[in-house]
Length: 365
Ligand SMILES: *Cc1c(COP(=O)(O)O)cnc(C)c1O
Image 1 (cartoon, rainbow, N blue to C red):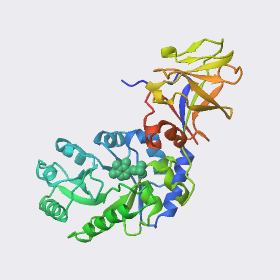
Image 2 (image 1 turned 90 degrees about the vertical axis):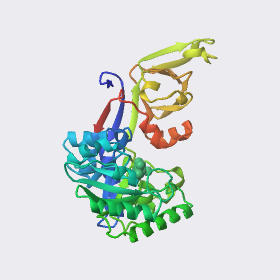
Image 3 (image 1 turned 45 degrees about the vertical axis):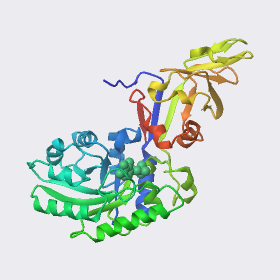
Image 4 (image 1 turned 135 degrees about the vertical axis):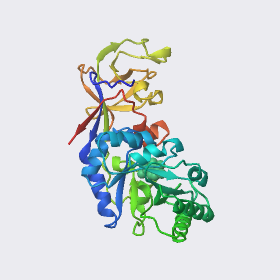
């Protein structure tokens, strides 16, 4: 069982007003009839699925996209009666459960469909076309036609949508993107019947490319106020508002003498008399060991993490003595998830997804 640390001085703060603003700005940027589906997979990219889903719905999201069936079931369990699409592969054995809960699932090849036992009630499916991502989806017009024909034969399956996913939408160079888009348009045009929901856009596509001939966008990372890539930051149509900040407090403050060491391996050695503070956050919280040396912010002053990050704790070097209880910003403000991502040599998506359930989330606004 995952335990959440409600009685500890480390927490993530999620600004619901920021999420609402990002959704409303994107909705205003989209043509009127294009629906925004909030992508809340992976515990809403570490922001907390149920609170984010509630907030997204308030802001006008018309439904949700998730990666696995259990995420969809958790939304239904919590009372959300909105459209939900599982974008990943659902084992056929659970197609009946999806149908019963009115959760749309993804069809990505003919075998998935022909192997499906008769269902107790209608199952809505979205056909995934692999136009160049090389991940899930059918790869030819023939396969699309075959699946269309197979669905037409069945009373228990409805082809509600068709979609694709771009590999390079977050890059300024668009030739690969254009090729995928042209391929998808061609596939849709060749269908016997155009499904009700034709969609292709992730955040980067929804922000940078016209959506007039599509019915919905799958808005993920930028709903959380983060750019799909640093490269397109200056090309975004509006300012994104990051929703998540990560805070902790100094639980012990001490003075080291020259030659004193810090943390496992005793890799850090004080060269002079210096003040350090112990912070109650570590790699088991998603504040991984690669954060060693990262600069965190205390009242606007940047201070380094010294020595190794432990499972539950780490240590920072202070410029002077600070009172126990002083608040420390690990992620947030100028110390954005983008800054952390650059330091960790990864992407902002991973920075927030890493946060474990042990970190409590506090929702403001
Ligand atoms: C995760 C995911 C998205 C959302 O992408 P963002 O870049 O976070 O907006 C959209 N579509 C598919 C298929 C996905 O897996």
